[in-house]
Amino acid sequence: RFSRSRLRVNIIRHMRNLFVILTVLWPCVLYAADDYLIIPGKRVGFITADTTEADIKQRLKQGEYRRALIQVGEGYSRRGILLYPDTPSEIQILWKSDQKIFSEYEDDSLASAWSGPFAFQKPQRIKIQKSDSLWKTKEGIGIGSTLHDLEKANGGYFIFEGMDWDYSGTVVSWENGRLSSLFRPSLDLVRSSNGSTPPALMGEKDIRSDSPETQAQQWKVNSIIVNFPND
Image (cartoon, one colour):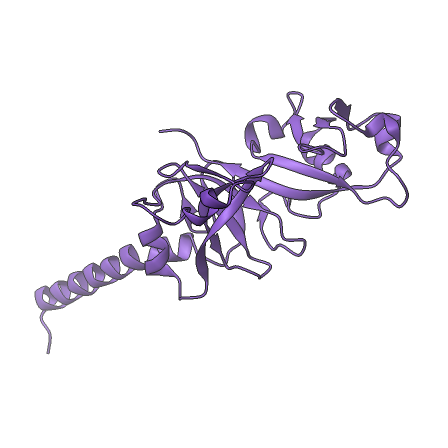
């Protein structure tokens, strides 16, 4: 027969063991790799501002990530990592610790991309652009969200760049709407209407989402960029 004191000791021991287990497992539950949740500036799935390549290797299986040259615009690329490549979960990661740029117009530049010492530590930005992507914010914004979805979440109109140039469709201002502080990553819109783009919506100009020309077209989110704060 157990004495009360011995029973109390056993209860305390089991509680300590449970606490240790929860301490180890809770981060894995909280930041599950497959929760597909974007919390702007804080995390994309299990990737946070302090994640390193070593963390990714420890967490994922071979084939669930790979190093890659990632386009950054106008014929230039940077070294980075693809998570879940060639799947609806694919994301591109660029790193603060490695910001060297390589020109796609120079063969020697690309050939030397993986030479020399470098390390991937602390994400700088994450890009999501798969058409069937599973990633969304808690507000439900993700690839394929419509212009009206964004206006509803923002509580009003916003400004984006005109079509048919390098930065076409990029949201440049939420006009002090709810997404100004809540959702800071860059969004790119693409026109999903049939037919040619009206001239009023083309070129290097600011476009209001509530203009008659814009509202007459159909739009959807084409890519999302999540930026992590500077140290």
